Image (tube, rainbow, N blue to C red):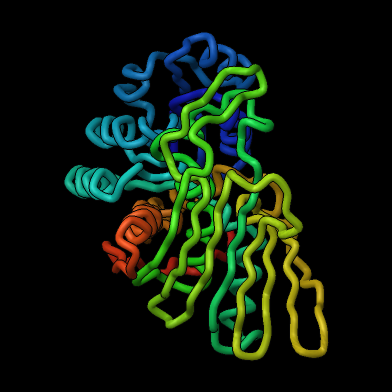
Length: 353
């Protein structure tokens, strides 16, 4: 399937490289509001032409648009692609709110095109190894999970950190999709949540000295109740100066525990714990590196086969609903039901080609 990439910032490099090697995807065009970035990307990848965004969306040889814009542009650009009759795969989050995400999916249904969304890290070797162990009963009936991301904030290292403190970002919407998508793949859909959230600092100072106003919560804690009965505790923060807790997910079953490394990555490590000790689990090499774009390739394969794709708009909308409901619950100080309901995606055995 012929692909056009919108926005040629830092993340586009790995997408362009991987979509050139994954079976079934052929990038033919790229576009950016800064034309020089599109031209530079096109020069690095033979067969890719740099065009204005409007021309890419109208191009008859572009069948699927990969939308790598900033979060507040995700829905407008994705809607434009859908209205042009093209499939679209967007970076996370699908939308900055549930209503806009639902509007996008409804437009896609009306036009008969598909919507996919990052993160696709849950398709990687790490999460899928954990899933296979869970489904095989390696730790018994799932009881719950913990998920943690504790860091000092992106201004400590990122060259352009401002948008991380705008609506659609913060630790919840920027990093939360990795954790929540993995948890839904492992434990199934979330039915209700309770939460607390705060912005500890009203301003941040970037490395170059400019001040960044903070418009989103930067320390978020949540309890998630799953349809399966499992309960997870999630803490996501840009306000922690130092921690001994790694970025990871722990899954608790009646007879054992699984630990998974950073869900922002595709690989391990994966460990299996029981009362008599811990064992390192072998994680396959396939899909254990930086495989961003794997969700696009799996989506293309699914379209060709006429089956549902895994990194779907529906899964991403459920995750956005969970994230948004955490903030609603934090304001209300009570449990809040999650709508729309979600479904656990099928396990991923890998691309067939």
